[in-house]
Length: 575
Image (cartoon, rainbow, N blue to C red; front, side):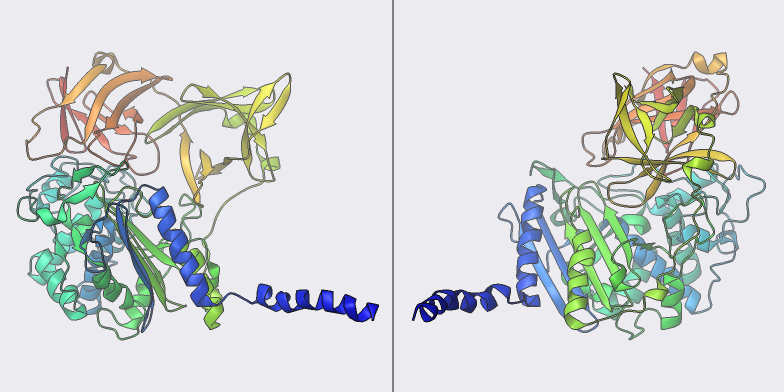
């Protein structure tokens, strides 16, 4: 009897176990994921956003979020920023597919009046492919009339580029260029005989039924598109931009679902399978300065979620709107996020790295992972390096710093903050502070040092994944007296009242032995930060930004009077 009583006590607990151990269904996961995703949007101070995940035939997830009681849904228009570049690239690939262009031919074959000044005699010609993959060495941006109530026709970038110098030899390193994609828009017009917006409308929007998409070109006539919010939820005016083929499209979630599906449904509405595969192919396998960044045509290979096979992404940002597009062709999946707030796509990575992965597991989808090829990288172990030889000055577009050799360690000084590099593993360093002869390490940041093509590079493992050059060892040159006399504060001259003032607090000064240009972004911009640009002075009038990365190699050119200089299309006058 006693044994039976014990069994009666224990038995109910066994009844509870199956209910506690029930595996979560995908629908349960989807519900929890959506709640968590929206919660994070709120925590990121996002005002409005929409997001979706689709497969070849169905919409798996489609949701809207509003943190300010707005009536936001899948038909609400958002600016997609640089996701516009994907439309431009598809237009180029359609012309290629039709035999009207060859992307491996020089772009001057189709735009003969393109005549940028080539700084590097050894450079190969600037091909369409090099522009598509941001390896053409072109300047990145023009900030004259960048955001304006009524921007000029984007063809004005051609005479601007013809007055500029190349920043790097073709193929040297990936440097993101909005101007390059504006140039591709000009190519579309020259080859097709149509205005760029008309070509996109007739050859992409119309075949896909993207009836709610278009181009944001006139603030006064399209004020319904201008609503945006800053990080505090304050309404802001979102102005059109000048380089339309690089970032001028507006669209809705439902329309972007149609566009994303065209990459995975096999229907060949825009591009046939062969040309889609050309678009998806790895373009920079041999490029060591690109580190671990893998470029497709227009798209970036993502470095995570290998369970999906290949994953391609492109993000977009305007003054305040944000967008993110992800294509996983081997898994037959795609995702999109659109938002009207600066942090609107901060958690978008979860769509592919979490949600799509769980979907593949639930549906037993197993893509061919061998298609996800890696690129060549050069990382030698720390033990084989002469670390003391890495001491010296370093520069990148945005920062200058110095490495000293102290206590048998390299000691960088960045923004007046000094620390030591202490070895963490065979390749990586972590920052450390020295106290009472002991090194106290922080594992929040990881750095590498590597010599590539004869140049010593300071590399950071970025918080979001991937590696980035944050400094190149450089010896400061002698600063000519004529440049020393130009130190001081400057302001933008001839600001058009229709334009947003982009840069402020501009000054030329000396720092760490370099002659530097310093500035910050206007408060009307939701991106960018204070910049310190070391300049390589070539002659009495011309200097170029030292370092790799976006903005590297850009020209700073004084006029003959020596009182005014031009940079990013803006003219600066001494205060």
